[in-house]
Image (cartoon, rainbow, N blue to C red):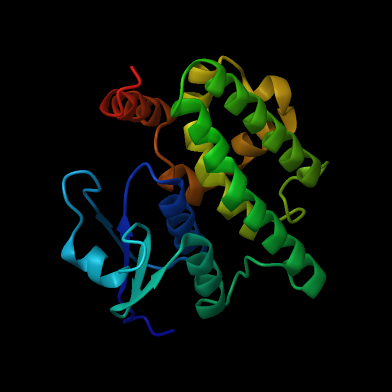
Length: 221
């Protein structure tokens, strides 16, 4: 692509889905502008026009052409800026990466939300479900440094944004990720050593305070 490409991300600072788009752009060395959306005070006309179906972030605007849904955007980024590929070379490995992407998209945030978005027995069930999801991810990671092997890649980018919310899940759920999934805990620390991840991910304590504020808005506190 030409150096004159205009790349903008319609963003929300705490969103793990926005984080994966920004990490992918950082990994590719793409210059971009992150435009923060006010998701509670009123979404911008640009967001509503760019993603009229779901009306949510992230949206990637590449030369003013909008693209929605974070995992689709990361795949697009990998295809358009093809140096330093994120997806594996072999078809089978790519299919496996997409399987785990689908699993992460369906399970991680939803089970996390069942922890912070509830109280009592419902939260206890949510905590058990979340720990079970982590254990499945730990099995997928195995003894590898990253989900795809030795190199930080597509599934790592899909998953790592969620880790900024783990402190909130731990404090509200009364558990420690490291106690149940030490390999996932080590993987998070490994990922945070990468400039792309450290630059993009929000402070987990700030996310925790945001979650507490949101719980109050929902009448859960």
